[in-house]
Image (cartoon, rainbow over all chains, first blue to last red; front, side, top):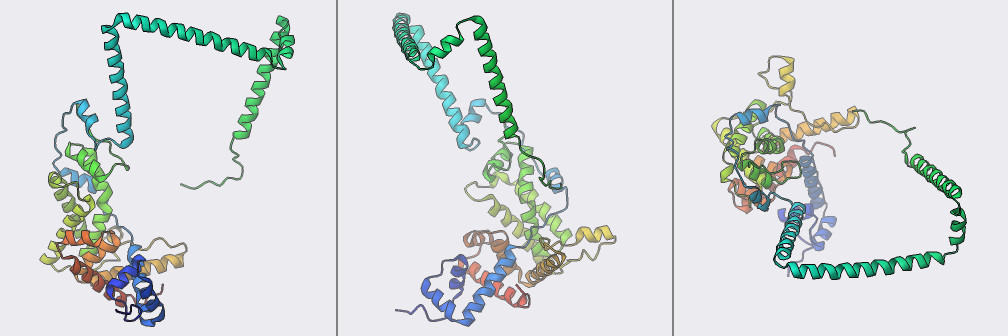
Length: 201
Length: 201
């Protein structure tokens, strides 16, 4: 078996080292061999310099000059459904939105069609659903009222609402308190501008 | 209904090409906008003449955009256009021997504006005047060194380290065996190391 810690780095080894995938046995050699170490680091320096070369810009107006000589095909007339169905035109999010919309419209259409063709069943279903909703709502309301009546602050509220004048006064005080709270929050959330540097355009 | 795909920075090259094929003028311009700098940089560094590089860049885009119908979206658009650009540069180099580097502007420029317009701008990321000068010197030295490489080495090293193509893409672009591409890049880096050995890091 070849001892990988011996023998100078090959071009493939150098490439692997630049990519950070040189096997550890070869890395040992690289650390121990001054020639390979110098070569590898010089190679990396050249690669870094090449990578930093700036992209150069052609003179302005290239686009216009090119477009004068390019034959742009006439815009294709396309049905809206074909545009929506084109997968590469729409991103995943838009495809999901389009699918949801299609599902909703399809479902609504089916529902309307069924309702028209089964009027009796629809009437009895609506009646049943109405009764259930009424029962549910009434029971819920009773539960809420009973719960409120048992709260310790119910007595104080009753006292406040005992006369129209007291009720109006309480309402005014509540509104004032709410408005003060809003103003305080607004002031707190306003970003400070003092001492902030401005970037010159 | 005439419909164009949404054109913007988020759209993939394939989406922009699709929109261009359907007759979107904006999509053609977007392709030019995306690739004018990479293509011009590649060609300029191949032919070493700004005016000629401008003409070849324009020629590359006209050829590519007029042949969009033959582009196969399963391949990267960048590879496709770099291949056309590289062929244009290589053809030009075969036709005439152009190997002069005009870092300080075209020798044929008659006015100061023309000199500045044709000068190659390199190394402008320095933080201080000294850094900037050093960066410019390193950038200039690298440009000169690249100019000394054989054209086939030059295109390989540019595609690999400046445009960021994979070895396989370069082999495909240049119609060369993968091993040859690796050898060319290795030799090009060897030569660059020798040319640039005097530079400090």
